[in-house]
Image (cartoon, rainbow over all chains, first blue to last red; front, side):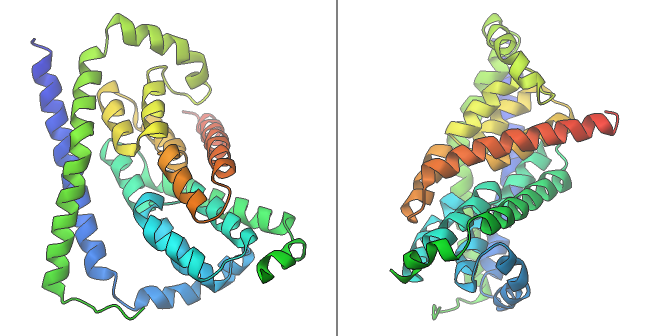
Length: 151
Length: 149
């Protein structure tokens, strides 16, 4: 099995690279997550969120998803979505945004590790998510859904 | 939002522990996958399956073998996908292309379930993700041609 040796070396190299990314990233997130600047940043993007048909109630689950990812952020996303009683329209809009654009830091970095261009990947995803959500918000008017949000 | 704020050293410890734990969980299937793909690379099986998917992948400027990475990304996650991609010797542009498409559509089963449990239509959103990934891929491919790649 001469082929096995380079395969194992390659696997070990990949593992090492992943370790170098994941551990500092998770640590950094843990250190920074309590800083109030994150909450203030929420206010700064208010106009953009409004343009996508989302209220401030949706900010926490949205940003959790964008940075942490749907799988890791699931606990927070589900809890907030139910507590705040987001309307079905808002839930779907948020879902559409997150479906296109989530876990952006980690997802982008692991492809950069194997040689991809991070700016292109990140830029296209964010742009698509904002555009698609904005367009759907316009098509799906608030009024047709009013009874629903009063529920 | 009244959770107690731990001090910095505690946060660093929590972060390191969580990071290591996540890494170990990933290694369990990333490493075996990498070894399997590296060993199969160049064998008749992969070449046959690769040529089967070649026309589809060619739409996005990718080699047929990249289809395996997409299967891994859709059903499992991105770590599985890059474990499959790493031994394939893709160009930086091809990696970017895969990264964009897979970044949009991955881990569909699990994440579809999460989206659904928030109370929205998970299945529809999952279909949207696949379509958006396809469109984004074609878009980037077209841009690449325009720039003269």
